[in-house]
Length: 217
Image (cartoon, rainbow, N blue to C red; front, side, top):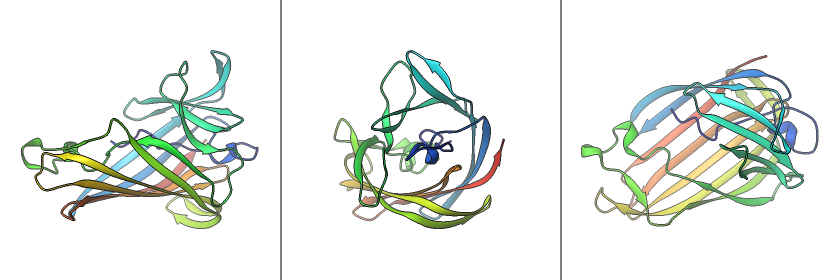
């Protein structure tokens, strides 16, 4: 299940109301994964806890249905996520978000790997670089989205891209292009994500569409 990094929302302030949960709640998502025409339905369930103080900072624990635990915290630079509350995390959203604001974060190849039996003989793609850099930009703060959980207005829209040179065990592949768009609603968090990973030359393409179906408080 593609649970890591699928986080979200609620509170007050200039940026944390898109990301930090204001209270305990459960969020459920439907996921439609397609790889070269093969469809793989999934579900993601995230359980978010209230704020607690740990190691000198206020953190917001969460856990996915597969047992993955993550922690959110806020600084004057923005909202971060980490797997270890004693370690610094990855920036999810900078402070005072506005259209045109840019930042970077690490990512990995989520879709085009061997977990989904995409490649015969267990072939997979391995990045040539030590890390993959995602380039993020805020596109708008007024997007309107309709998903199974309802209609959401004033959504923050983030576009992210990366191009990954790979060591191709599947012969002839030079790189993978990753493109992603996310929408976050104030007080709710992530309501929709579309992620595409495609090979260069164009041989294999995978698309993931994740939509919020319910919020239980």
